[in-house]
Image 1 (cartoon, one colour):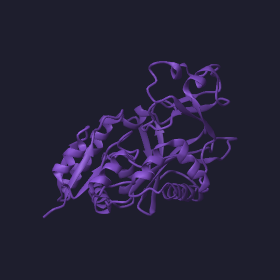
Image 2 (cartoon, helix red, strand yellow; image 1 turned 120 degrees about the vertical axis):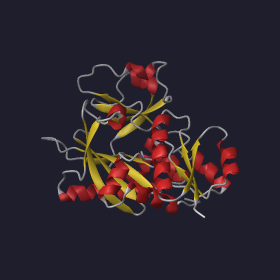
Image 3 (cartoon, one colour; image 1 turned 135 degrees about the vertical axis):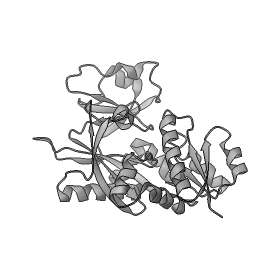
Image 4 (cartoon, helix red, strand yellow; image 1 turned 120 degrees about the horizontal axis):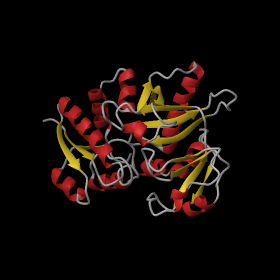
Length: 307
């Protein structure tokens, strides 16, 4: 009898629509691989739904709070349902950008300088000398990220407005100029490195990530061999330092601008990266010789408890 997999998707975070796309893509691929699949749009009754379904494993395709911060992982541990991706601690740690930076820095991974500030204080005066970046402490998909340029005399006022929905504290980080890089990790090995070039705008924002044609993915990234290998080393070290399992994706910046610093820093580790067939991780896996079906099969067969 084929293994029964519950694909968890949707949820109630700001990344709900992206999660539905990831989940449906994974579900379709698993069906193609011969699994019995139930698509589950996660709601407050998820514990009851899973208790009734009794799946052999759960493929977690949720993005954002409750899906990748340790919450759903803890529930799956309680229900004794083996699941994909990282466990409770690694998920919670990687989701909290400031705590994750402390752990990565202690493991020898270069990260941007920065500090946590109250959003109202950050709206009154610059928390760092421009240019710098302000971001929510625990959001994904570039939600709420603001780049404050050199010429900006006043800090971003949206931080003090009722429109800001990303928490009372924000992370302010030194802006690192240069190239946007990303590297996938599969189990205990780093895969290829992609350079991301937004088609419009200057950085990899939500629109560049998810709008059709919003960015160009250069795979493998055109880097000197030693830099390419260093990116892979940093991605794997960050994955291991945070205690990640299964698939993760590290996002980095590399300043190779004329007269630049040459800095190569890890911005964050995504424990629940996008999983549509055109997402970065499936692209990188395909370049390494793994089809989308083989990738999701690997993830399900890797599922376990106590991750």
